[in-house]
Image (cartoon, rainbow, N blue to C red):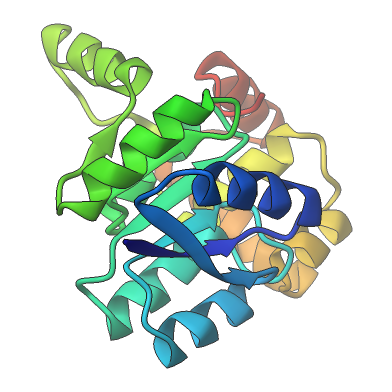
Length: 210
């Protein structure tokens, strides 16, 4: 029996996932967290076989939560769930230690397959992501500019491209506007972009926003 902790801030999504998983004979949802900090605490205090982790949590970025869980329990598999398309966060999640990445719009059967695959110690990559990685290799893979950014810089870039103001970005990231400005300056410098408009154009061109 695979014991699973679900971390998602939407009660309806948690309920839907729980119903799908509990209907399966080989897995059970034995814990639910609605914030990043709660997910970290529960994963440390209880025994789970796996964590299903939403990448967009209200208090902490999902990748930061993933890193903290893996720091304490390196053998705990974490499967990332997201509304964002694969090209936005999948590679970054896998580099941070995720065992797999799944879009929330995936079919229930795909979710069950992913959990079983991760449950036996394997990685799970969707066919869409596998195709993107293969395309990148066949074209002579070169790391894209945004993949050189830190997670915070990348989050800043995505929020800028979504049209968020500095104050809104600071609130979402739980940081001061001054700190967000530093991240914005750093990402422009790293990516050799002159201004916000160029950064937004880059993000849209590379499908970093939905």
